[in-house]
Amino acid sequence: MQHAVFLDRDGVINHSLVRDGRPYAPTTQDEFSIIEGVPDALNTLHAAGFLLIVVTNQPDVARGLVQKDIVETFHHDLLKAFPLDDIKVCYETEESGSRYYKPRPGMILDAGEEYDIDLTKSFMVGDRWRDVGCGRAAGCFTIFIDYGYAEQLTEIPDATCQGLREAVPIILRHSGV
Picture 1 (cartoon, rainbow, N blue to C red):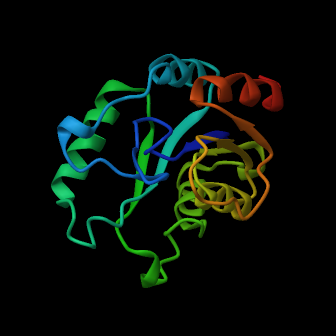
Picture 2 (cartoon, helix red, strand yellow):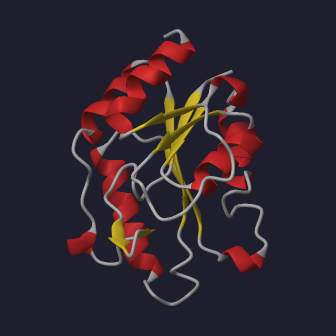
């Protein structure tokens, strides 16, 4: 079985737009920018043998705030630029009850089956309580990137750091790679 690092997109790979202490996804190419240190972090994790899979909620598509093709262009560009193995997306809203909308673990569970991943030896990295809950529900080691948003965690993550660059040594140390 393989091991993976599951990554939220907004706030982990690219900058979130923060308004009134709450993070929001970018909706235009001009708003979409990669966080400093992310390319090196992804390359290091890839070189260590991890599958790298983005799992992201994008409910603004269902809400009509951004076109699906714009989000897919972001993802195409990410797959081209970085050693990502896949990007799993939930375009539904929380109200839909979708098994894929984080904190529900559907995206991770499906990826685990698709790629033969040992989820107990894998990691979920995210900047919101939903990411921690999703990783925990899937059986992954959870790493919370703490930006001090105006929202509370609902579960305690296994580790906390300030960005993906700081998450890499935690992952390498915990995995024994």
